[in-house]
Image (cartoon, rainbow, N blue to C red; front, side, top):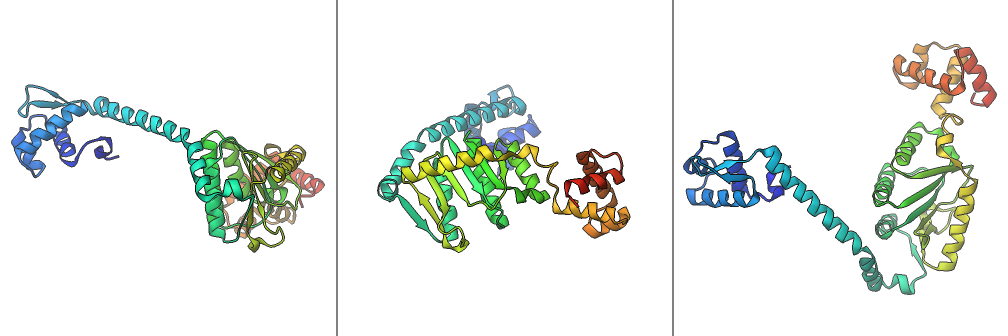
Length: 321
């Protein structure tokens, strides 16, 4: 971080750093280092005194630099406190801003259902609505492929909501558990505070914000048909009731990983059962032998097996291979 972020101007920063490097520098030397004149340096020193990072002293320039860990640390703490106050003030005006925005667009008062077709506009509208969400986000996510950009944007919105203390409950299609990367990503999300459960699909996409607004596909069978943003209280309350019903019947994410292996884990188990060596299996899936053996150890632990033979038998009983 530049000292200018703490209230220093360019000359003050140069003078302060110069005094730290050599406390015996006079104003002429400081002016030469800062490429300016003595008068500007004296003004800079007065400004540094006001910031509290130098003090009057019997030194060639008349001032001594304070210990950076103390004086700059104090400035950082002041800036952090001011930032916190500003965040609290901004948070307190969200409701007013929502009212102003609604008055400008007239959507909250006169439009009960918005139909948005352009994908970029759908993402923008969702980001707007998430900004004003105060208490809860409920969602149902089907096992449908999405782009890396879409996943990154969804993660950003989720983290922003979780950071404000919003309750987040998400139901995923259980087929997503077969992807190791997806399971890792969902593990990160639960670590951030999201509650995740799984149901057998197919599922229809649904997002509920503060139990007041619903976002659903315009046509669940056609991804290009766009989305509907529903404000009508009767419809939204029915969708909330439907979500709660699904949630009560879903399984917790924490209980799932040992019961549903990834496709790659299934492949590893099948190849080992067929008698392939660790070296050949590792080459087939594109990992090191050491990585493969760690994976085999994990699978044996999940299966409660003491040997690879027992692991193969247990995997067959569970229908993994």
